[in-house]
Length: 420
Image 1: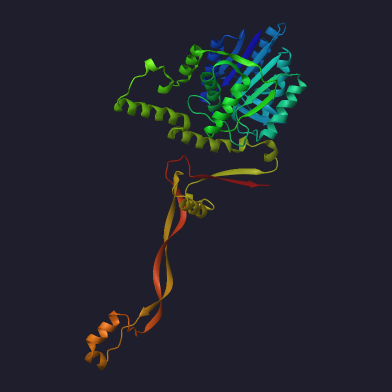
Image 2 (image 1 turned 180 degrees about the vertical axis):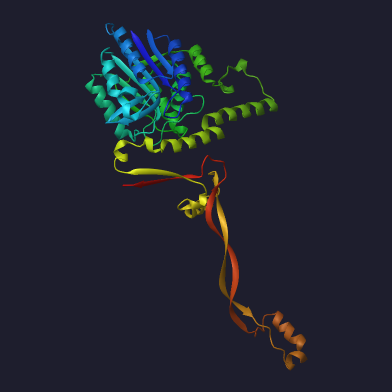
């Protein structure tokens, strides 16, 4: 038999909620059901507490422990963290001081999966930053995952993780970008789709869009098939993702010539759809900036740091008090062609510069008698016997004295201070 476990944690008590994660899990659940390959699916979404999640997985494992499990797929979307050289799946009631109860270690999950002894294990993890130590690079996460899989005898394994760099996973209001790309691969490919095909599609798609580079761990022979996909199933996934088939993909008999108004309307809709995928709203941006302050609160710092340092945080009311503000302004002035929601400010200063000043020429009798001739010589540049005097001339000039934001913000800046 083939089974799947799907968790989408969208609500958090102490961390930023992730509205897209419920949509992610609902979408994956629908696609898995439509695929028809899974005999049983364990599904939870929304507000999921750590102990509740562990109970649910344990019950599911007990239910199928005596069955012959050919394939197990585990999908998780929500916050993720790393402690003690292990990856943690973070649930709604997560508390760093109670992480063993309110989160699930990846090694513990592998231990539970081992009870089912699946011939193939697939884990798809779309994890966002939770505020604690995060996966920093391929070199950090891969040995951790491989070690746990080996210790729990998960010999045939695919592990797809949403990011592998210092960048965190990204999402908009509707879906996380990694999950969207994962599901879109099913809508773009046809026939017997291997897990390796999905990984290749996601890697290309994320790279082309400039999104965080995913991590893939493969301990299998690359022949394992996710499912058989036909035109009807592809259409179902496209509609679920709200992907519109481009005109060139339509059969010739179904193509219709668009007038200029229809073309313009289609273009505007396409731009709107793409913008919603790429950018956040002003309200979302303001909310995310506010979360920075919450994440830097003293109660969020690890006990190891608080045991050595006293952390204080102060609001900065004016950009003029931000350290290196002048350097920031100069950088903005140098890169004025780009938009950074800020601009350099300028002051005016007085300075002196030495210049030669021409003195009036003294009149003479010869000049009076031959005035016309002298005027002609001067106009032709043959006569320049004026006297000059070196003087200091007062001038004014503009200089960069700082910077200012061009958009509203919950606060102008934060200052962290620590003392032993």
